[in-house]
Image (cartoon, rainbow, N blue to C red; front, side, top):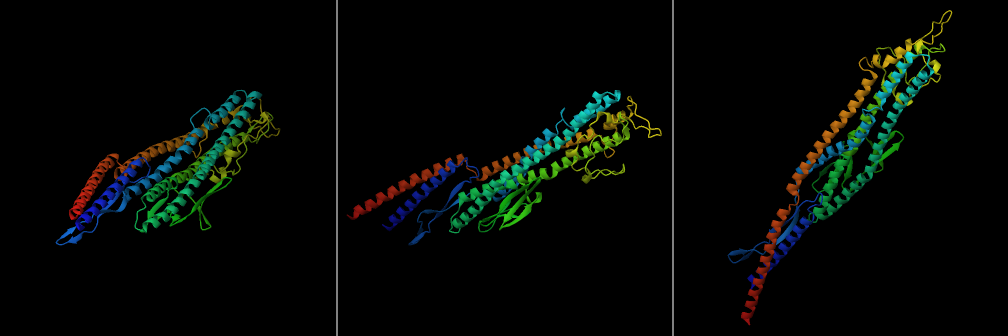
Length: 482
């Protein structure tokens, strides 16, 4: 009778294990499209065998754990590639805006420069014509406005970047707090000998999103606690404590700060990555470089036009008149000494036409100071010819004209944008391949689940049949005793 009772217990455990395994398979199937879900599997272990005379007889089966399929190597690769993907993806929008600003069209600084010098060329054909003189002033104003518009649009791109970074911080801080909470939950569950599968899946997905958004790196210790930190090593999550990332925006100054325990520390491009790192990189490097090039172009054009304009004479025989304002940092330099960044900073934003009287446009050569002093003849066009040719004859740094410098800026922006498109496509393809590889290793395969479902269904049916048979045998034994 004892043997039948043992068999009855074995049938019961088999029935329970097969039923629970089917439930696990059902959970896998229901999460086949859940992002970040890892396939779960029942770990089966037989009960210790008992000695019956000369034999050891098994006592059934039990589920000791529900394991989670996981590959540390592929998970780390996905997080690393997520950083690259986030970085390149973040560059796309501002680079598109920069391409629009520095487009090859009929409405840009290069075109307005040509129109300005063309107006001066037309004036040289009839230096006394008041309409042509007014047109020179008008085209100078258009050119100055074009420089201002360009740097204002660059400022607008910077503001858009600041807003994009700020909008991401709420989500980043929420994810950091969630990881800290999951660390506590996972530790509490697993210290009791169980496995926190769902919580681990959620935590891995959050770590991947943080890698993409801010370049966060993560490592798990022996207690199952995930530590998250920035590329430069500054901590984001330690144990069950999450830090806070905030933005300080004051005028043109925009600073990211990491707050931990009431202490704030500024973050630079070395301490960030992913989307935030890409936005900071283009804000702190590419845009200031472009602004510097535009300022230098405005500085050189203003100074060279002014120098030559001051050397000529107007219809009223006046000399030494400025056409554009002198850049704020202008320091007369020897021809062999190019202007420094400090000298031409802000030149584009402050460029404007200072001459208001058309008669003072120095189309002619400067009058002889005498004695007796001479006057400028109405038909004198000698200085207007020189002014009209500055766009072709003056070489910035001795190598490039005004238009070739602007063309170089346009080309550099185009190259950056094209490189970004190629890098983004490569990062997207690599991420797809890694995700597919992960799904093949630890994801849910409906074909495998259906096979396992049939296997455990057959096991359940067999266990039920076994249990029914043992029940009939026990009934027979009991009836024999009657």
